Length: 367
Ligand code: NAD
Ligand code: GLY
Image 1 (cartoon, rainbow, N blue to C red):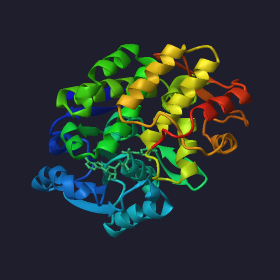
Image 2 (cartoon, protein in one colour; image 1 turned 120 degrees about the vertical axis):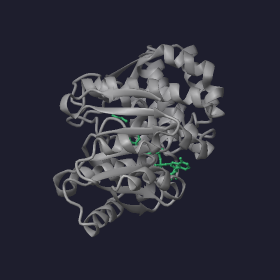
Image 3 (cartoon, protein in one colour; image 1 turned 90 degrees about the horizontal axis):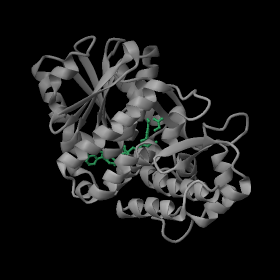
C-alpha cells in the first residue's frame, strides 16, 4: 500500500493507494466522529463494491445507511443532490454523521457538495473507483454540480478526511473510462512533471492492460503532484499559475462537455481534446515546437483518447468558454504550455489565434 498526505494544516488528510484498501474499515473508523455513516453510491458501483466497503464497518457495529443514485454525468444536478439530502434526513443524520462517497467523480462531486452543505457541513470520506477519480477528483476538495449553462458552476471547497483509492476496483472499469482517467494522468506530466511524462510514454501499455504496479505508481505520482499544488493554493486564488494549472485543457474541454450535452463526451475525453487545443495554441504562440505537439497528440492517441474536438464552431466554443471559472473581469485566462512539463496561465492570447487553434483541432477524428 502507498500512502500520501495532503498537507492543509489541521485539515490534512491521508490518501491510501493499493489493492484491497476499500476494506480498510479500521482506517475509516479512526476518522469517524460518531459510529454512523451514510454511503452515497450509484446503481453501477454499489452492486460491485458496497458490500466490500461496508462489511468491516458492520462488523465493528458502525450504523451504515446508503443512498444509491442514478448513474451518469447527466445526473450531476440539483435533483440528484436533493436525493442525498433526502437520504440524510430520512436517516436522521446529524452533524456527526460521516458521508462516504463510493464511485467515480460524479458521485464524489455530488456527495462532497452534499457534505459541504448538509447542516452547514459534515465530515466526508472519498472512496474513488474510477482512475479519473483516484488521480484527480477525490483529492483537493472541489465539490459541486453542473448547471445547464456551465460545467461545475455550483459547488463548494470541502476537503475529505480520508481518501481510499483501491486499485483492484479498476479491473471492472470499462476501457473507455480507463482511457478517460489517463487524460488526467497525462495532464500532470504535461503541466509540471516531465520525468513522469517520459515514464508514461514508456509504460502506457502496462497501464492499458491494467498492471497493478504500474497503476499504483501512476496514481501515486498523480496524487503527489495534485497534493503539492492544492497545499500551495487550496482555493485557486493565486494570481498566476497555482491550482488553475490543474485545468490544462479544461476551458476547451468544459465547452465541449456543455456544448454537446453532459454525458455525450466523457470528462477525460473532453479534457484530452482540450489539451490538444491548448498545446496547438502554445505552438502558435511560439512556446512548443511541432515535435512537442506531436508528442502530446501521440501519447493521448495511444491512450485511446480523442485528439480532436467536435465541430461546434469557434464562435460557440468561445461563447461557452466565456463562462469558465478562470474568467476574471470578463477576461479569458487559459492554461497553456510554456514547454512540455511546465504550464502557465495566460490572459493575452489573441482571439484570432485561439479561434485558429480551435478550428485546427476540430473535426473528423473526435469520438
Ligand atoms: P463517473 O463518475 O461518471 O464514472 C464513470 C462511469 O464508470 C460511471 O458509469 C460509473 O458508474 C462507472 N464506474 C465507476 N467505478 C467503476 C468501477 N470500478 N467499475 C465499473 N464501473 C465503474 O466519471 P469520472 O470520470 O469518474 O468522473 C468525472 C466527473 O468528475 C466529472 O463530473 C468531472 O467534472 C469531475 N471531476 C471533478 C474534479 C474535482 O476536482 N472535483 C476533477 C476532475 C473531474
Ligand atoms: N481538477 C482541478 C482541480 O482540482 O483543481
